Image (tube, rainbow, N blue to C red; front, side, top):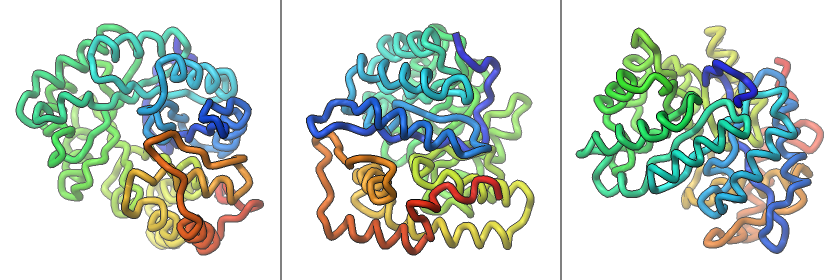
Length: 322
């Protein structure tokens, strides 16, 4: 059963990374420490596991179950845990959702299945509706739909999202990664303006200040594994309508955003792992193939970005109370 009933996905939600040992097995001790490091940021709303940031694409179902159980054991009494649902088949996604609820997760983050990406997201809305309904029928947990760019085929047109809001009561939020500023603002205005609002959680970390200024209900980002304190300070400044303060905080976030989210984007979480090693928060930055270790020249740029942002071994998460 969920540890936090009636959880509403909003506010600042970091997506945890997943530490590996040199042999690519899950480093459980490092995972527990990493989760506690994030959970120590007073004011975050929840922590997400088994997402892109934790390389869920390279994890077996048993490993995903282990990651969820470790998270619930380590931080689940103090914070809601959101579990990612990454599966190409609706039946398998429903099984993962049921497992999540039985284990004690409070919410789901549902990734689009790959068959939808072959045009189904844009042209066959019944595919998306059927997928989410199959999951909703298997569990009472609220869910967040991961919204990808429409041009890639994995995103859901606004009309599809509105149909989901009308037909699926457990649909509570989108993680908006549309990377379209006009569409993003429309999502905020339309979805959050419904009689039963659907929260918009931005994941537009490269332009977080402009994104949050549209009125997003929160953010869900892998960068929260590094800068949850800065994200929280920025979100609070926006909520307080203090633009000057928000711009000062964004100036600190900018060096890491520019570093983590440059091309190739497949290495964004690879870079974040290296950042945590530099900060002394992870013992190593192992990623599972096909991802590969970053070259030393790029690791140096990460070190410089952390320095430019004023993030040090002693200073990480220093702004949580501001």
